Image (tube, rainbow, N blue to C red; front, top):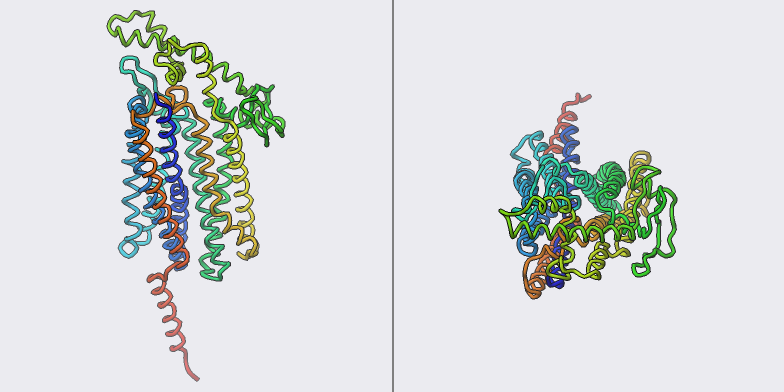
Amino acid sequence: MDFDIVELSRLQFATTVMYHFLFVPLTLGLSVIVAIMETVYVMTNRPIWRQMTKFWGLLFGINFALGVATGITMEFQFGMNWSYFSHYVGDIFGAPLALEGLMAFFLEATFVGLFFFGWDKLSKVAHLVVAWLVAIGSNFSALWILIANGWMQNPVGAEFNPETMRMEMTSFFDVMFNTVAQAKFVHTVSAGYVTASVFVLGVSAWYLLKGRHEELARRSITVAASFGLASALCVVVLGDESGYSTTHSQKMKLAAMEGMWETQPAPASFTLVGIPDQEARETKYAIHIPYAMGLIGTRSLTTEIPGINDLIDESEQRVRSGIIAYDALMNIRDNRDATSPEVRATFEAHGGNLGYAFLLKRYVEDPRNATEAQIIQAANDTLPQVLPLFWAFRVMVALGFAFIAVMVYFFWRSSFHGQVYPRWALRGAVLIIPAPWIAAELGWFVAEYGRQPWTVDSVLPTAMSVSHLSVMDVLLTLIAYIVFYTVLFVVEIGLMLKYIRKGPFEDVEETRIWTDLHRKRLSHYTELPTE
């Protein structure tokens, strides 16, 4: 297996995913915020809320369209660049993707059209229902994608079939209600809500700094601060749940995130900062918070969290067990009708470690011929690069707590200071607009980079998952994707800035309502008795 192909294929998929995820969080959050604003409009019949709904809805629509354009190509990559992955686990991975297209994408796309073109054709209540269906469709899209991704992190509800040489689903219920997938879903969606809240907050703050559209801006800040505070708190709480699930399903990822080289006595301390040194296998200049990691990772004072060195030793034993499973599998494949019960029993006993034998495919064609050095190297490969993982996680967490502080401040000013904000706070709100995207991209980096060297954790190594393509094929398509997605990103930024500068347009319905009210006042005055 040409490792250059693996690295280029990983880089290509990472590039497309990270571009796509520039649009996804804002789509998730704005869809709900817009639905909330329209709900207030229907309840109060105040024109300003209709204007707010249409303005933020327009920005949502721009973002939604470009998100769809960048997302479609990702699913084609599974067949183009990751054909063996698609063959090996397609029975499980393909089901949530198909449901995402059938249940979520069509629902969302259909009602987005009704949302934009149905203002004068639907009743207020009917249009409100459409707005909420758009929001539900957006979140359904995230649900099925994250169920698929969660299965890659924690492959439950499936088993390897030695007759077909593929993974096959045994329980759709287990796949759908995978604890890792559910924690990942609520955490990711909440992060999207924070992203949209910070965006609405920042744009509204810019309007106040410029002295424009102040009524819309103040109400938008109130909505964003309230919704954003609840969402930011959820991100932290649900991030803790993700950490707890990682303790059970991805021990090496957790140990690498913590730079924890040795198993500590329970409860383990949390490394606040430090500089992990992978060659020396130690974290230098570390500052620890006693008991914190044990409480976060195990929610107990007596359960140990294994360190990196012990986990590598465990991986070495699993590689050796996997070689036994691989040998039995080859005997089953070569003698399907004459396989002895003893061989099948051997495979059943060691089959759970078959993926660890596949790690040797990077070094030797037949894992049964691996040398001791290759076995040790394969075990060491189960550890991702610690330094980038360690700091990406800490920056993401620090930003999460910063968002809570920002939302608390603006919620307090909105609720108890008559929606009056100091100019320094408004400038700060504008400056932090990019911060949620940075946090989201770091979160995905931790989730995906921390899973290496696996495409499906402990089941299928990344080096085995790629298609048989030439380096030039992958390199040219990588360049094409970067150019195309960069153009789309520039278009997105240009359109968003154009309509933000332009501001909310005058609504025909709003004009009609205020004209009617003005006429009523005039008729009231003309009907007053004269002296």
